[in-house]
Amino acid sequence: MNAPTPRPRRLPRSPVVLRSGQWWLIGRTGSVPASDPAFTTVLDDFAQAMAAADRAVAGLRLRQSELSAPDPGDRR
Image (cartoon, rainbow, N blue to C red; front, side, top):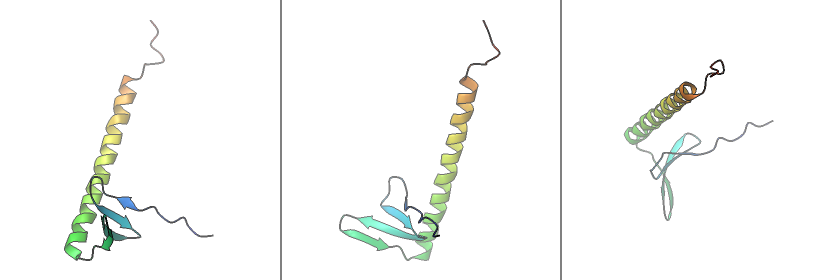
């Protein structure tokens, strides 16, 4: 049984996609693999920072919804 192929991850608001561990620059006429190690390191770091920010926002939204939910023991 083969494991499912991970979907490509696109960095938000950018022409960059991570496919099978390789960064690709996407344009109107096609795509080119990003091969510069310094550039791909920056892309890796940026993707990790974006993922951490997404998790933090999700945590804040969850906390906010828990705080605004009515207390089932509060009967008036």
